[in-house]
Length: 199
Image (cartoon, rainbow, N blue to C red):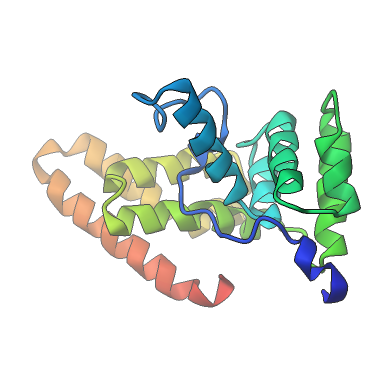
């Protein structure tokens, strides 16, 4: 990584649900005035690493415009990386151009380009963390994971099949939802422990 390491902005890992980065979702900023919302969204964008932003693009959770916004905030925070400057300067955001610049930035800082399995890990990790901590209801977390990955290849889907099964059982069996919630939390903890070395 060498001299480019300081360009790996932002520095903090995201622990928010990734819906908050998609403009059409506003559940996280209800009740805030416009100034508070803008300030809060800036913090959210700045807390996302480049690798995670790529994963969001791979899994269709972030638009090209989201990447440009993220790059603009990186630039404001002091990044001087050529690719970040180019992204932040885009007036229009063609997907191919945005993705190419983002991949070039990852390469420049020595970060691997996430494949399908790694993209799923990066997206699911904060969701599982929120489930375990109680910030997100177990069923909501499990359902969110499956809704994100349902279109991915079988290898990726099979890795998270347990959560789809538990979410489906939760929906069908109202009498035992508390038990399914506990199982989802247990599985989320197991996933976090099994993948701890990856983060």
